[in-house]
Image 1 (cartoon, rainbow, N blue to C red):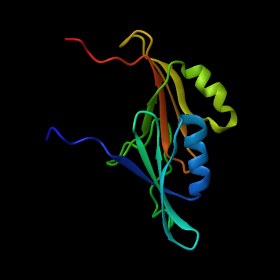
Image 2 (image 1 turned 120 degrees about the vertical axis):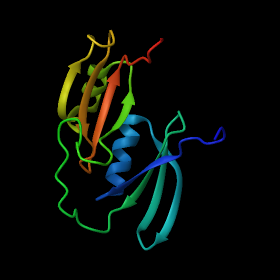
Image 3 (image 1 turned 90 degrees about the vertical axis):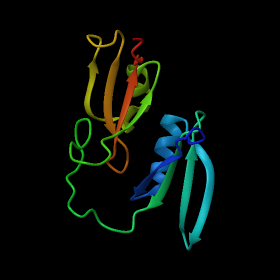
Image 4 (image 1 turned 45 degrees about the vertical axis):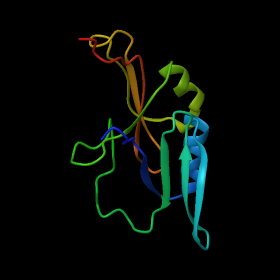
Length: 140
């Protein structure tokens, strides 16, 4: 399917405005579209410069007992974490200040790829977000 491109990841949020602020301030997202659903409820599409979209919904149900994500994310079937590449993990975490609630790392994976370093943290809804530098694909 040559014409298929990745579209978006949808997040159910306790406070969509807080989640929007987090991804806008720390990961360069901006509003791409808002779809009003009535009252104060809306769907917000956030977009970054690489045309990655996040679709934010207001959660309308309580967590059904799924364990809170820790470390690099849940190890059961489902989404483990969102990931972003940066030029400098330490500088990014420092710039995030108290918003960088680290769950694991930073870890140095230079034994696998020279310069590869990663840290995992939580977004406002407890989703795990990986911030990584130095990853490269295999050449052979």
